[in-house]
Amino acid sequence: MTKEKISFVYVTYIRSTPDKVFEAITRPELARRYWGHENVSDWAPGSKWQHIRANDDRTVELVGEVIESTPPSRLVISWANASQAADPESYSRVTFAVEEYDDMVRLTVSHDELEAGSGMANGVTRGWPAVLSSLKSFLETGQGLDVFAKPKAA
Image (cartoon, rainbow, N blue to C red; front, side, top):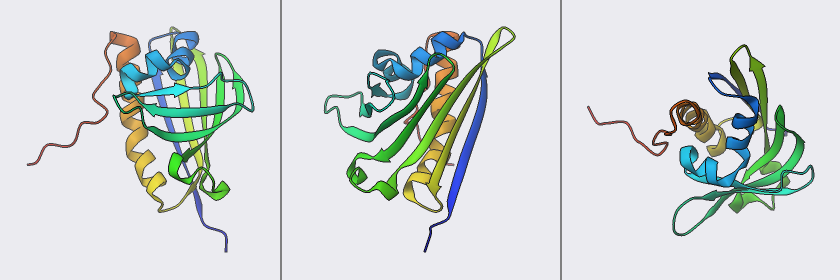
């Protein structure tokens, strides 16, 4: 039986340039400043990529492959928990579309091929808004948000 697949789409507007947005996603030293992780790859189609926690233990949390890379306008990657890397069914797909929009950038992140109700689907629906808000803050002010923050108890 085929499992139900869902998609997540997030659009944000950032006062920046397409080059700076693309670099913030693909350069490890920039991604760590707003994401708390480094995205590591040579970003050529067919290459592997890793999402590595930017702390002392440098845990590889996510893995995948670069499906398409057209700097600075488009990046498509496969995406899976490192613990599930051997299972082809565990992979989803993330597309970053970077468009110049007057004096800013419209960044559309589409995360599709997610298994409905999975831990990954639940995680990305909470994670992407925080990460992309932090990216926007980082590019506009030089400082990202704490993407690991938790709600305060009432």
